[in-house]
Image 1 (tube, one colour):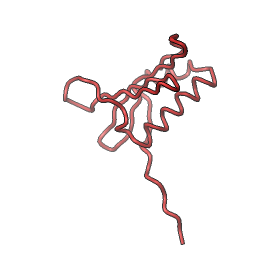
Image 2 (cartoon, rainbow, N blue to C red):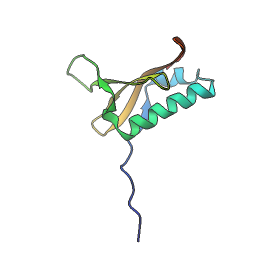
Image 3 (cartoon, rainbow, N blue to C red):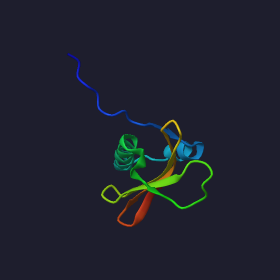
Image 4 (cartoon, helix red, strand yellow):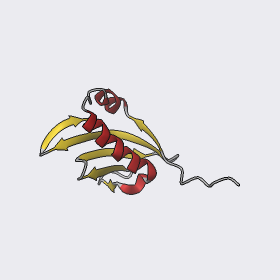
Length: 99
């Protein structure tokens, strides 16, 4: 008897500018914080708050994790691919890294 699988996670991709800035993350803590946020978004792409804007194209969303001090800007395509537009990691009120 085969076991059932959990819900399928969304595919995560980075915009060109986000991918380039991601290379600047060097701290294990920053990478871990961003990774945890990406897991949450991949499980439930609608978790983020919709940001106001035009209604043409995908809706830009913002996911904020106050515990990990991470903010991620992203949009979800029609095929449920999550495109990371940018993010920031903040500790003690000081921005450590921006993607």
